[in-house]
Image (cartoon, rainbow, N blue to C red; front, side, top):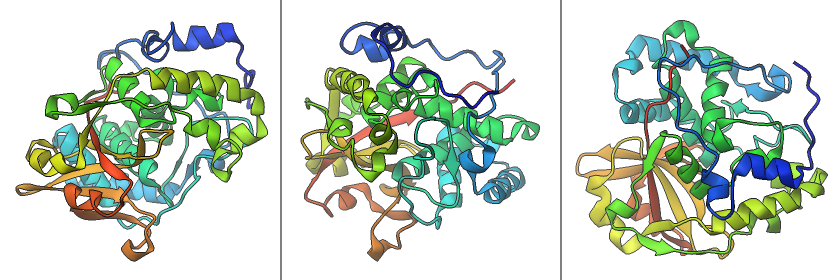
Length: 324
């Protein structure tokens, strides 16, 4: 497959074809329900070299061996996800690991360094992967499950804009495709509305290598963030989280809602049941906590550590189609 990227400045027609109609429909309207387990999945080769998109391959194989030895596949999806997360605990924290090229976007993983988002993605992708026969536990299959979770409609088109950069969109897009359910409203969540502009404001920073090198994409990113601003978002205020912890399940994705004005969430991790309590498993950049993937204290306790933490949103992933 050629490594030449498609046009990196999306024209309006392509944008509409990709994202659908106006408002929230741009994000949800063109998504199709996830195929059944009997539908064959076409695995693709990456647009960039394997040495760029798949770092820490020896660790991946060790995790697969552990999954086979411990029969992870026998567990429900939530249990499988926290089992994978526990296996990843101790991995050093590392930021910007997805910024792998100046122009070409491709699904990727770095098992040697994880941040909060890639920790939950890798845990969930491993959980979904090992439900397949072990003969399918390959690099290509793992990146397929990363692509399914990370990219709008489950498809990377080679551009940075096709990656979802806000958890609110990830949850809405993946729920529409049958990959899980946003539990926040059913847990008593309150409505929240923001003018989302985070990616535009941070476009010249180190964390936005693609936008810095392709400023023509800013218009498309602005349209994406405008549509995210129209999504119906709910959150559980920090003062109410302790009372709902008993209703959280292993493997729930817990997004930490921030008081920052230009975005909704500032951190993410996984719920881990601990008797009557529910702990927070995540990748932390805190030196006092080891700058690594860890099992932290209760979610309600974690929220009190920063004044900018104002609550949580809860997404419960479901099974994904088998490779076939």
